[in-house]
Image (cartoon, rainbow, N blue to C red; front, side, top):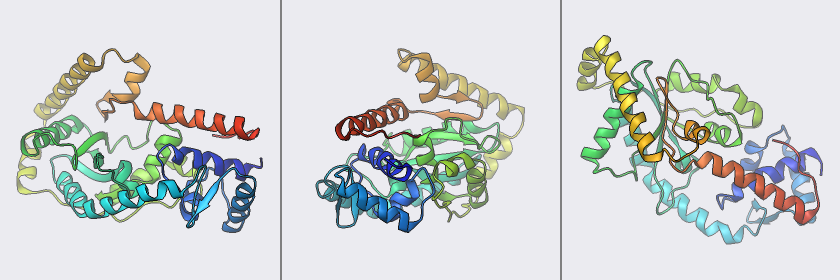
Length: 303
């Protein structure tokens, strides 16, 4: 199998995990090697003739896309209907104290929302105040949203002095290049500039754009004033310690290495991924590639 064909199979195998057939433009953007549209078309035709992929209505998958398209169409309609509310919430998050930029992430950033899915947000905060920002957002969700995650799932925070994503693999690169900027345009651009490795892995991907600055409200300005000095720094450290201890009590049976990735807790980053989704997806992707290799007796090397 030539390198472009192998890249196509790796890409389709990844999105097969999400029952997500891809059109040609999407395939090109997620390929882990450079390719022209003409070369892509030739490789797709060869793989289809060899039975390694299937096509339906312009969508490609390792299995029959027609069985997956109804689910994708239903999820896309649900996401489109929810988009205005998701963006309003993103702008609301952007007005919280010490929040500097907000992105839609997860399935919504890929245009889908299942009937049981959440709207996920990726948040960038002011340095030294990440845990205050996170705690205020958690309190808002618990008190005013009755702890509902459906349209307000904030589970990944970094600060603006640490924009380089530490975990660098296909999963995190896919999540990064599909982020939808919602608030904090200048900082949004800086995030993508700080992570060129993701665009090196996906050289045909386009850099996301389009965020606007929400601007702080009066209450936000007052809180920032009162929490800007040593008291705020101490409070931030306290919130980090309390959150880490709670996570340790609840998820302490997770291995140390997995816990570090799923619940990364430092002054400049907060991850809360109890299902360790990253690990599960990467492992399943390796298994899917192995299954394709065994079925078709081909070697599919690459990242």
